[in-house]
Structure formats: C-alpha cells, structure tokens
Amino acid sequence: MLAESSFRAACHRGGRLERETMLGIHDLWLFIVSGLALNITPGPDTLVTRDHSRRLLEAVADQRLSLAIANYGSTCITFGDFEFADDVVNESIWLIEMADRDEPSQDELRAAIDRLTH
Image 1 (cartoon, helix red, strand yellow):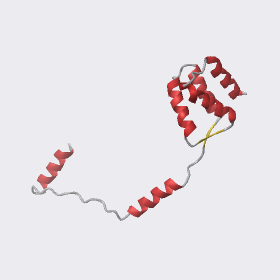
Image 2 (cartoon, one colour; image 1 turned 90 degrees about the horizontal axis):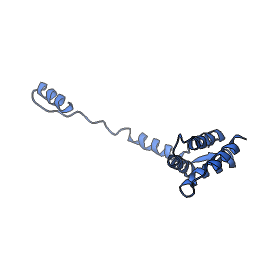
Image 3 (cartoon, rainbow, N blue to C red; image 1 turned 120 degrees about the vertical axis):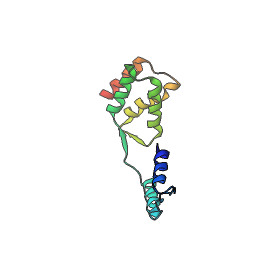
Image 4 (cartoon, rainbow, N blue to C red; image 1 turned 90 degrees about the vertical axis):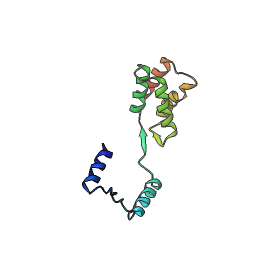
C-alpha cells in the first residue's frame, strides 16, 4: 500500500520520484544527555510487601499460578532491584525462588502464608 501511494505521488509530480527530507540531528546532543541522565540516576525503589508475597503464595497454593512461572517471577524479584519489607517477605520469596531445586509442599506454602498474615 505504501509503495503504491508513493508511485501515485511520483506520477502526480510529473514522473519524478522525489525523496522526503530526513530529519536533522540538531537535537542529538539533547538525546545523548537525556540517555546518560536516565542511566546514571537511580529509579524509585520498589518495595515487596507482605501483601504482594501473600498473594503470590496463595496463587501458587491454589494452583491459579504455576510454580514454574512463580519461580521465574521470584527469581526476577530476587536478582532485581527490589527491596523486601521484612525478613518474612524475603523468606517467602526465596521459598518460591528455590522451587526448581526443592519444590515446596502445600503445608510449607500454607505455613509461609500464615507467617505473612500474622
């Protein structure tokens, strides 16, 4: 469709195919400075709360979320730039993160959920 419209436009200009002008690089310095500023400055801290962890564990325990997907997500949380609200949250995320080596039982999941709610 684009080639056809370009061909029609060239026919209307007397058969001459003219190129559109390319944008200049007069603001390239601004693009480079903005990119550096975004890479140098830290972003906002992301806090993983008890509620977040509880919802993740409940989804796995109720089989609404597969353990493999929860394991991938918890690995991203563990090695990402996330902060944990407290040690109980950290332990619950690590319970799911280590599931590829030692799959947690339903009792272990429920016990972790109970620790998060109290």
